[in-house]
Length: 352
Image (cartoon, rainbow, N blue to C red; front, side, top):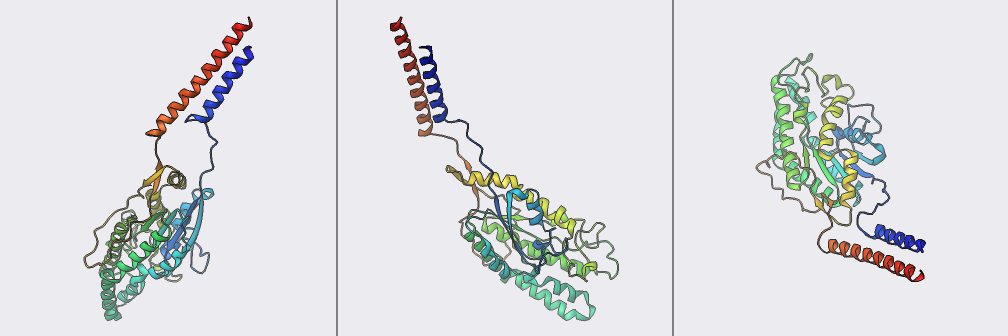
């Protein structure tokens, strides 16, 4: 009869192990991060490597560099293109779905015609063109650009409601001091370029705040690495021949954009874990990473985009009735095992 006792104990233990909380479970494979990169030549990585396609995407772009840190965990959709304006990014947002987990956006500079304005202001014979370009940029910063950026962010959140969304800014292009070589870049042109990019970044940060998404400010990281500086990460006149002038080079993408983007969203492993928590049955929403907020410029009439989307979730602990159910189940099963044991002892005693 000792075999009966052992069998009863084994049954009790087996039932407890399968029912009580905390029972070991087989580890599931981590989820893949569905990542969509949107934006212009800065997001495409122009100047950071050999162009891979007609949109001049390169392997040195920060979305590709982030993906490469653990390519087994990330499925990247590249929807970035050189020359892209916010209207182009809005169209490219068709690549997003309800299953998209992460979206990066770098856009806005082409709406202002920054490159054309720079060329006009560098030419002493085009003073009138330079003044007209400046006036057009100032008007766009106060009127059309905020609404255009707001429309992009609203569309992204609607099409990818569960995704983390990150909007990046642009670096200041010029060092206020330093030798630019030949041809030189006058101090007033440097100041103009920096003022324009600063105004653009202010608009981007404000719209990101209104949309409730993260904004990545890259200006501090590029400080000391502008054109005319001692260790530039932005391409100067040497990039005129291949159209990479005013773009971050390989170092600008790898040492400027990539670390800041990673700080905002985490590593691919971090995002994969966030997806697990977000999609858990008992998950509750968690906020997307906070960005650097900048006050909304006066004159912007953009309403805050809908509060839908963004964020994820963390697994809640077992509470309330679930706890008591687990305790009562455990007590009942232990009692059943004890009863079986006592019954077996009585049978043994009778047999003797």
